[in-house]
Image 1 (cartoon, rainbow, N blue to C red):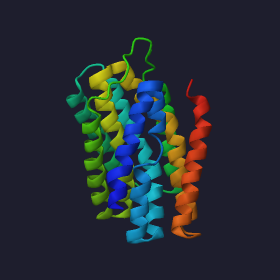
Image 2 (image 1 turned 45 degrees about the vertical axis):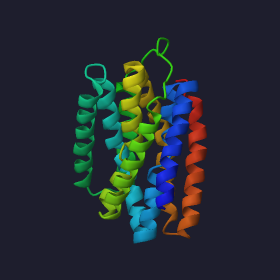
Image 3 (image 1 turned 60 degrees about the vertical axis):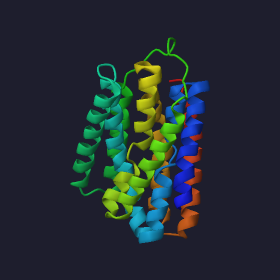
Image 4 (image 1 turned 180 degrees about the vertical axis):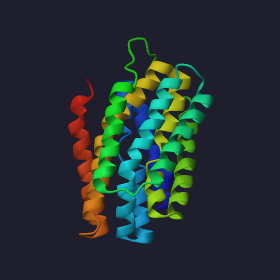
Length: 249
């Protein structure tokens, strides 16, 4: 599992950097919705605490989409006014506030899905729609540092999740790790418009992620945990491919 954490997320970040360079930040944001970070964390929680714990964390992860979308909205809006350090601080504070609010609620599946859906619908209206005609191509000089940062953040989030209850574990599984690393790098190297396109592209990626977590919540109590994760991963990939048709919207 340690080897998986040390290789999977940095390798995926490398892939996203290539996508951003050749197909644009919008598509990179869409691909970032795949549960590459949350999947291993939830699988580890199942191994350490059992299927019921992981299923409860998956339910919380669906609601946590709302907190991640608040992070994206704050970052996208403030990136036009501030440099990346201050923008990142405000966006993380927004995520933490939303996460604490969600922790105070007793969530059911309909409530969790409703929160996630509302957040996506709100951001589909409120996130900027930048023109990308003048955006410079992505540069990857800092890719090594980004991969290192992603590895460290993954280890920290995984460690925290494994020592907390199911509710906070599910919340941390959806910590906007990739959004943090990619948004900062994109703002520094490509500017505001590319950053906003990246974060808007993540909206479409929520469909596959939500399907992954919902499948886990439904399947973990019914079958072998490893098989449940395989079926959930297949669900996420299928929904992600389905959402690809909306990329031009």
